[in-house]
Structures are given as structure tokens and as C-alpha cells.
Amino acid sequence: MDKGVLAIIWLMVSSLGLLILVFGIRYLISRENLAMLEKGMNPKEKINRPAPYTNLKWGLLLFGAGAGLALSYIVTNMLHDYENPALWFAFIAMGGGGGLIYSYRIEKKELLDGRAVGSGQ
Image 1 (cartoon, one colour):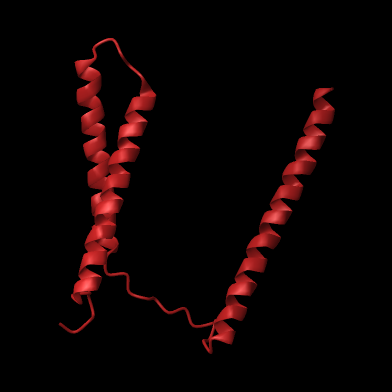
Image 2 (image 1 turned 180 degrees about the horizontal axis):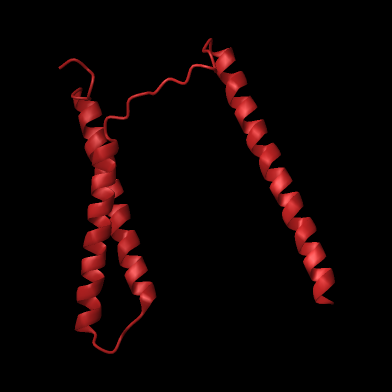
């Protein structure tokens, strides 16, 4: 195909995709507002619900990612001739995932013990 034809097709497809994206987001927002109305809530009032474990989650995620980065550095230094960037990303992802799993276990334990933030104890 000619480059001009491909450019026109690309322009049409990307414009259509953008249009679908905008209408999809608008549709989901209206569905959310209708669900809030059904529950007796006012959709115009945006209530900031407390998220007590957000800092813990981010801290453990970043700690785990840093630990994975350090572990990948150590492993690649031990294997002198083996420089695979996929190894670095894999260790970072595993460390971050481990941090999130540990955060979930802490939250679950505190909620089951009744020591949740805001429980008055």
C-alpha cells in the first residue's frame, strides 16, 4: 500500500478509537452516578473515603521493588557474562509483588483482630 493511504487509514482508526474512548468513559461515569443514586447517595458530593493503609502499601511496594533491584544487581554481578535486562525487570516485579502481598496480609490480620484504624480501640 501507499504511505498516503496508510496514513489516512491510521488517522481514521485512531480518531475512531479516541471517539470510542471518550464515549466509553462518559458511559461509565453515568453508570456510576446512577448506581450512587440507587443507593441514596448524591453523585455531586465526592466523599473522600479514608484509606488508612495507603502509606503502608506504597512503602512496602517500593521497598520490595528496591529489594528486587538489589537482588538483581547481586545476581548479575555473580554471573559476570550474563547481562539480561529481563532479569532486572523480573526481580523488580517479584519484589514489588511480594511487598503488596505482605501489605495485604498485614491489613487482613489487623482487620480480623479488630485493630483496624478508626475502630475506636
